[in-house]
Image (cartoon, rainbow, N blue to C red):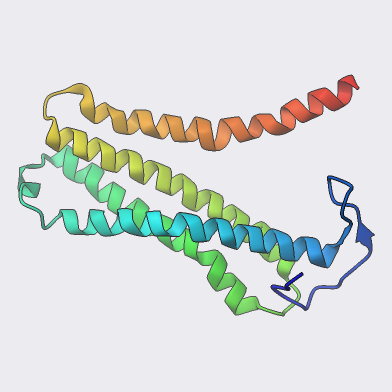
Length: 176
């Protein structure tokens, strides 16, 4: 198995959750970091495209017709998309700065939190951008409220549904 960081102690053999392939602590940490970095490789292009779109929108014809509320939401979307980009790129930087220093487990916990915060900012940024599109493109209609509705969908799909996994597994294990 290719190693992302060779400084961590291999430790004792542990069974993987599926009990078919035992892996050491070192192998598990490498796998977890590789999975996290691969997930970010999927997310980052979309975040960067959103940020680029938002940064150029201010130069588009019609931007000056946006009311003060729309401009505030637009600026919020730009700020959140920029912050999401920073938070979602942070794991790569952490890995580069602390490569082979034996802090992989702590780094994985930290960058996992940064990723969750970055994804949260991304969800709100997308909702804000959709609000602005609805507000400018379909003035005086309820269309702009699709943005806040989208944020609610992101909360449910990204947070509520995954949190039910452990609850369902715990319920099944106590019944068996």
